[in-house]
Length: 325
Picture 1 (tube, rainbow, N blue to C red):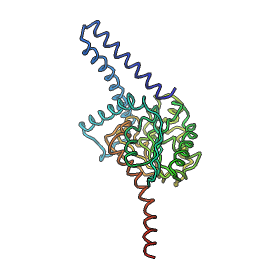
Picture 2 (cartoon, rainbow, N blue to C red; picture 1 turned 135 degrees about the vertical axis):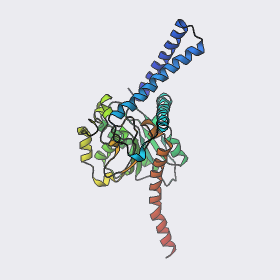
Picture 3 (cartoon, rainbow, N blue to C red; picture 1 turned 45 degrees about the vertical axis):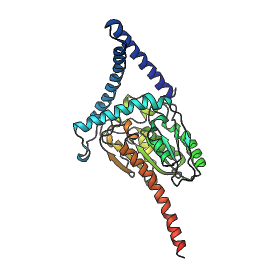
Picture 4 (cartoon, rainbow, N blue to C red; picture 1 turned 90 degrees about the vertical axis):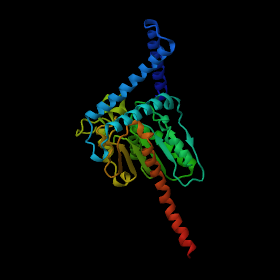
């Protein structure tokens, strides 16, 4: 079953639950139709809010110490919780149930093409905020659904390889950028282990559990097991250890890891710090919100634009030298 189908079924169950609660209220409490509808929808939203809040509580039990520079006030914590809840609701209830993987090519662009990889339990609809920004900047990009939903992360490598080859061919590019959220970052690293990193100009990961997360113990599937970790100082699973053991300094130098010290799914949060990579921390942002928060998206676009500038510099220098000959 695809994540799209699963999310549609969950939405259907939520709608039926809201209707049942509303009907019961009209029958037993004799409330009006609008009041019954508000009660039904509000009850479902409340359950979703409690699930979201519970994620923060579970993550707090295994949290890494928050550096002083990233500590937040109670008001900032409330804003973070609202951003994470509202983003999760919009993403899982609107964007992802309707999403279809797509490729958009912008010819005559100086930017490398971008392949977008989602995380555990998601699909290409996760990138509803970043994709329009890439379009606005005339950057070729493609989304990919990593399926099966609960499959082996290693098995995603061939899907990524096919998507990377196709995107580079269509964009006429030798290299591409991969932007990956959560498990998608591990899938990209597993792909590079098999197919090499020569085609990767930059891998930007958002909230990826490079050393595992304690909350993966509550997930189902082979991929959830591959992301497990025991305790704040406990060991990562064997799969993650093997993945890290085959990466050299050249591969790590291509990776930028963006993460939040208040991630409510990746715990400990410093699991996203990858030795040898460029690690950039944020504060006051939840896990799902990483792919939609303006600060994080600005950092992602900055990473992509930096590659354009790096590539343009030698060309400009060559033109300058030619002009003075």
